Amino acid sequence: MPERLTVDEYFLKIAAVVAERATCLRHHVGVVAVRDKHILATGYNGAPSGLPDCLTLGCLRDELKIPSGTRHEICRGIHAEQNVIIQASLHGVSLEGSTIYCTHMPCILCAKMLVNAKIVRYVTFGKYADESALELFQQAGIQFEMANKPSSRVTFLK
Image (spheres, rainbow, N blue to C red):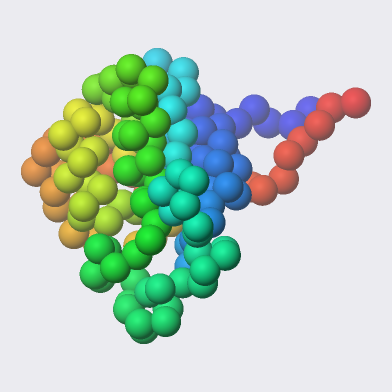
């Protein structure tokens, strides 16, 4: 009999599936916002809705040789954490008191937004080039956890 996933493994695995919708050529990032073991919203990184994305146009940051973790404004994509906040707000859902499960650590801009969204916990398994978000989370009292990457295997019972 297979072992049951922990709650954190379960939601990190879902975040990894959400990341498969990403249209960024550098990173596929997925986010699941959860409160009381219920999914509030999801988000992935990509171009604004209805506009051409990097899969179609190519990566502006690669063309300009901009290193990861810098010059966030020079990108046609919206970060997954930004999209989860936007999706929640479009549907009238507060993220206050929620846990964010994400495939990567946040950039400092996303961390600032998540602080103001009043999340209480951020769980990830992926590193990011800029780790300044960690100090901000600490100052804001947001619990940050680096977890093991969940298995990509899906177990089906007969």
